[in-house]
Image (tube, rainbow, N blue to C red; front, side, top):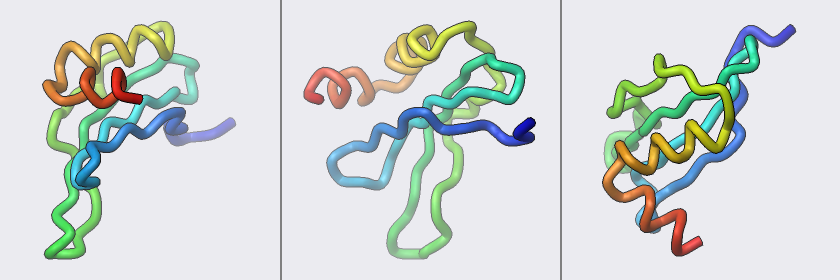
Length: 80
């Protein structure tokens, strides 16, 4: 059995420096997190939303909550 979350969907803003990952945990529950990267410093992605501890029963529930908590996400998903 896997010991890490599996990202099901990663949604980026067009500029590419923010994203939201929708993931499934080893126990079958779902979650999401918002990340940011600063291309100028090369440190990679780091969490900025601190949503990853929230638990959802379905991928759709996690995505819907992410769209209500992350201001830019609904527009990107709708543009799709």
